[in-house]
Image 1 (cartoon, rainbow, N blue to C red):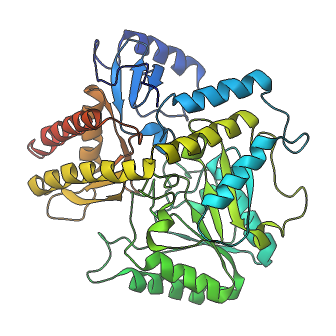
Image 2: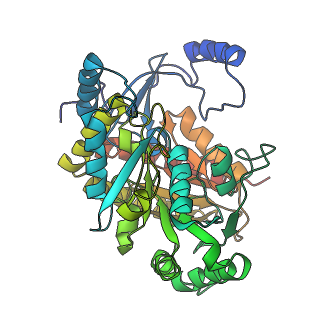
Length: 449
């Protein structure tokens, strides 16, 4: 890979946010709808690898990767080259009007990568929420059933249907209803908060008993689940949970749909998180890292399911845009060439060691969890399971002041999640984790109010 044009080093030349960012923020307040939030009011001028450079010349370490989007790094050379070349030829025709090869090539690549050796088909869209909505459309059309089963702590998007699928009220659902009907929520496997001794099969039995009792298996079109929950708190289900759900779906003619929008494309140390236990979904939704920074999403699934939908039933003006398709092909090639799945496993080992060391020192770190380069720690009141969103917020703010981008998540806002670009340099990762450790010490060592 070509060397990054921006030095991969943290450097602060002003306070954060700096004067130019503050000026831009004043313009933003006057122009942008306040419902669109931002985690950190530092305005980016350029970025490369795992470094963001703001309009004041500050260089920040990015441990969020645009919420797992730029897994191949900011301004990845192959992606930049592919996008530039495609733009010089044509930017858009709409695949539904005048098709082009790159759309077909992305579908071929996803059909090959998705778990299972059965025949597959893919349709492309622009956002993860679109992919999830279309997966539900496919499942309902193919099964002629109405019900969709989802799980506690789930996040699937911000459209009307995906808000219904999402578990968290604020900020995603509050006062935006009424929502789409025939959505049923059941308990997930949350090892840190489940009763002692409840393993994956037991947690699955709990959920499935509720489905059979309150919905009825014959009414369920699909069961939709994130193999590791993202916004819900990086919750990794206990071993055996996903296989048990998949087996029940097979036995009852229910479509097993896996949302890999945040977990997919090497993030967890495999191409897909469901690969860890050999789970083969009927439908797979992807987005985020697929496009290498360009907006692209997909539904990949069993050919018999995808073929069931009538011509014209799937699509969208920008779905599978040729520039985004070029970026995706370059991103997937980069992932394969650089073995970013292996990189994710190494990154996860480094992060896990750091977080577990902090957990040994601070009782407020109730749980450390994740897989690959998708790691998190849950902050609670010491000696309890009570979420501590305030301490979480202060740790993140301290990281931001020091020039390290970190993110929160969790149904109660008390989980710190780490999603660095998979190309991050080992020394830069260590520096970012050092800032995180200092922020944890600053906040959790302070006297409690």
